[in-house]
Length: 308
Image 1 (cartoon, rainbow, N blue to C red):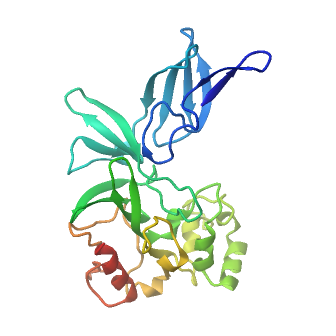
Image 2: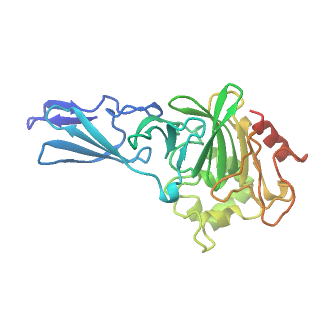
Image 3: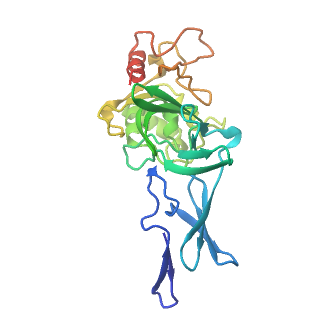
């Protein structure tokens, strides 16, 4: 919401829905979310640019009456990554963390919902703009949304306008964001206290948010996670149904616990079968590492994940 003031400081008018747009759930175009830049044109229309990716939005308002006029929502990344038409409902698509309604006859689309945002310390997984691929599967009377990137694959229960995370697997590289510190829960289990201190001294930029994910100079996040004594892989299952990550719901694994796999990581995405079986592909290993085989603890956990 933007406020207009008189020269004497008294409120002239407000533009936009009080409280702004909901973080997740049903989308209301009359609400703003993180407005960053404003301008008024010669037709006395107020243009508002929002600092967000879900969606990338510029809204237009009547500067006198405050009436909402229209919005412009940006497209996805290159190669349409972050976008997917729902194969079970071709009139619905997912674009950068939003639910969208498609009108194929008119060639139009509009945002109808926001899937899920991180809002608390326990919200490690979001369904925003950082995933690359998405798919939808039926599991009995439930509809499951699978989203994946190079470092993580997650399963959520899909509703009309949003989704609730249920499980995820991948590399803790997923939780590193430039300009931010690592989540405390990740640091606690990344390495033993003494080893963690050694890593913080050797790779300081990877712990203060200044390092890049990978830049080839040996001081990036990927290089740090590749060090001995690190547990860079995780599996989370939401056992209490609150969509948040509790410490007893997430397990961490070192490379030595992968039973021959060199990593748990995809190539832009993770292959998942129709029954939600997750397949881990290793270029250096011809063995079958599907989640439905083997006896190591990691595979057993994966099998429970696939049976959601």
